[in-house]
Length: 360
Image (cartoon, rainbow, N blue to C red; front, side):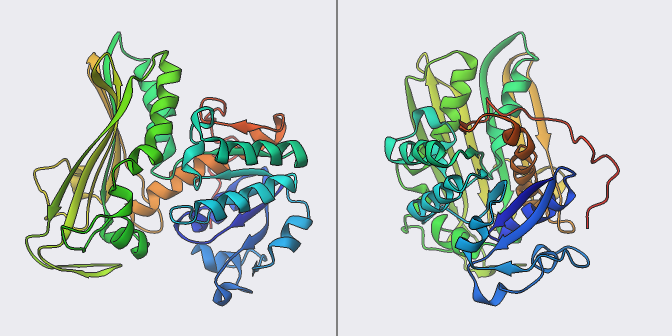
């Protein structure tokens, strides 16, 4: 059994605790938290799972890493604290742990990552012998291994489009939804995540990774952006009220240009309420969210993935599948040589030993 730490207990961390507990090769050894109110609480309670897991949350990072865990699921956010997240991750790698995380956007494709992100990780690997695999929470598999797999079913491929279609009204992360993405702000407010060049910083690595797998070179990366205001004030289940006239929907693309045309595209279509931008693509069957891959070519192929978790919450389901990709890679990484890995290196494997196994 691989001793595994979950660091952070937000949307990603809750799903990570459940995924580690369900994996037959992993043993949950510690849960690290920042909020003093969570210290001493059982991991099952923090994860929304039944019963008790017998692991209580702690904020003593030094003691947890000194215990020599085999793996760390770093589930703390890196959205507005990338330097701190990088420092945390390299600290765990220096302790000899395999680390998996969605928090370090520049390392989705580490070969194109800036030296200030890549070099500290390589130094930590050389010093401590750990490893790192970074995959997105939007989710990463929807912007790398799934589109690449589906592309292999066609005779010709003109373009690949990866879509996230999402209703944020059920998402439990108000700070990001309101301030990073701008929902509920006046239309002249410029959210950080939508500022020019930021989408490329976040998702450009995935475009480059797919281009590398497809054997093409990107001439450039372009961004498009549309925003819509709410026609009426709406109330949400998890984040309160959003006023009429404020931002209610966003649609943007990060486009990889090949031969002068957008050939590899990551598109996000997000709303705070289904009534906003009804002419834009929506999740099927009135759901909260879906991830879709569209292969333009011959034949034309579309694959839509919906996931639910924590009841009927599809937003939690998207997080859970992203976490599953990371957690299920741990035992493979533990067997591999220490190193910095990406989605083309780490295989997507079947759920060995988990068929019929119940999760709390």
